[in-house]
Image 1 (cartoon, one colour):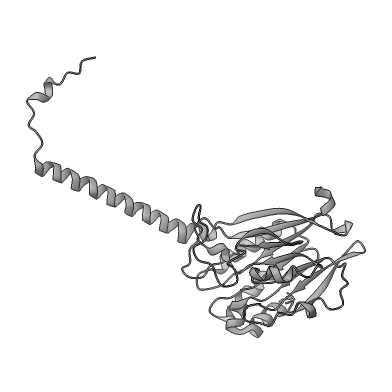
Image 2 (tube, helix red, strand yellow):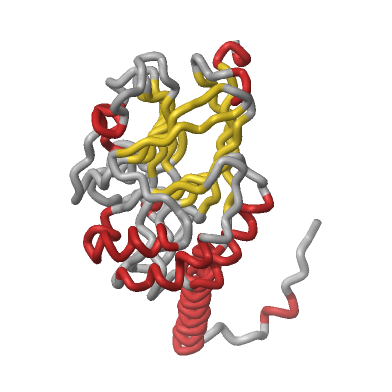
Length: 300
């Protein structure tokens, strides 16, 4: 095939000024494209993903689980950090969606406030709306202690949400029981596992709530603990493909999100609900975590 170029032969060659103008025009479009992409990325990171809830569901095989607790479902919520970034209307939506799961138990894993302990006065009435067959229980996190632990604790307990601090409760179902224990914040408090499990036999099945995940290696040394539930990490808030989270808080470097096997103990780390500054999320959506307990032999 012969290409006819005759219509081009009398056309003047483009001048250097035209070429330069064309390059500048292309460069301008490129800069606009990058800028638009940056604006879209900014909008997504700071306005869309921080309120784009993810539902994480997992079945966990538990050795020695009482038969009446087969398919026992617990929901974990953590790191609300109400105000100035995380707003109450978003948390109201979280509570509504958590209730739709109709859980047996709700575990609140700390950091209800961010800058002001008094924010709990607005948050606690919303959390009071959580519904679970065997109750809603809470522990405190480092931000709760850094502001005012007693204000946060009393704010929750006035609304009927028990705060476990080196304490445990027995969860009873069909004449059988498991143990739910909660520790004081490991970063700034005085966690005491032995006090928390005082009186419980060596064959007890224990779910442990502890805000910071990186103490799991120590907790796993107690054979009674089948599952540790933690938050604190926020998953890093930003997770880069093939790299992970470039920034993680103290005591969340080893275990930053999801499920881990630590010795014979399971550890689940939720990415949490709220954010701290910079108040964005990327590839790290806020989550409602639903964990179903199943007997270990059911998975073999």
